[in-house]
Amino acid sequence: MPNEKQSNGARRRLKPEERRAQLLRCGLTVFAERGIRRAVHADVAKVAGCAVSTVFLYFPTRDELVDGVLAEVERFYFELADQVHASDAPAPEVLLEHGRRFRASIDSHPDHAYILLNWSASVRSRVWPRYLSLVDRMVENHQRTILRGMKEGSVSDAVDAEAAARIMIGYAQMSAQLKLSKFDPERAEAISATVVAAVLAPPPNASAA
Image 1 (cartoon, rainbow, N blue to C red):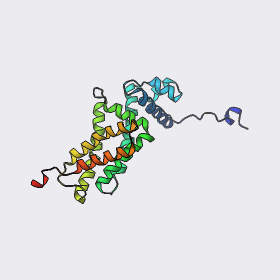
Image 2 (image 1 turned 90 degrees about the vertical axis):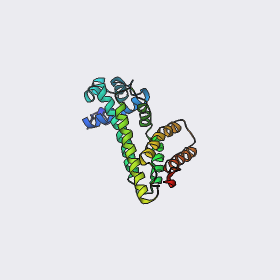
Image 3 (image 1 turned 90 degrees about the horizontal axis):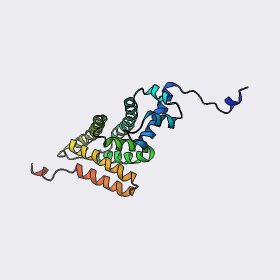
Image 4 (image 1 turned 120 degrees about the vertical axis):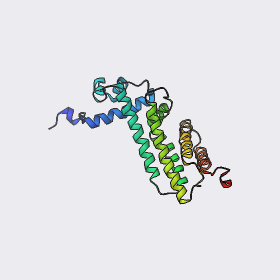
């Protein structure tokens, strides 16, 4: 017969991979609240309900803790983008859908959004080049979809694919700010559609070439 502690559901000892995943989840919460520059091991330990030494065991330095949390943010947004852009729907619709999914993710994963916005402003931090790499990866996804649209005829071949992609990625930050400020969702969708239509329109002098 199990003892009283067991019958009340004693805390199961987490496997190393489970503990690391738990600490990263707690890290996302802490970094979203305190920011990339201020969050430390003790903050994560407090949220996780473990000793500070446990956090150091999995992330021996603060840089490693920061990198671990940012890797989770990257993974989330890369998976979202890769899934959306794998669609064979017309390119303009794929681009609009990415915007919709991104805005919806702010409700489902707000910590990721807060960290992403904080990261985008970390110009003088060592993590800035990594943020630029994230942006480049997102630009590549958008650019591939735009180039596919050119081949299929849903996008004018006079459009500068890279420029259009970078404008849309730049708008994503404003889109997140609107979402977090409780901006009207229908209006946000209309603005997103206007941005996509504008960047995919051929330049005024295209027909004169």
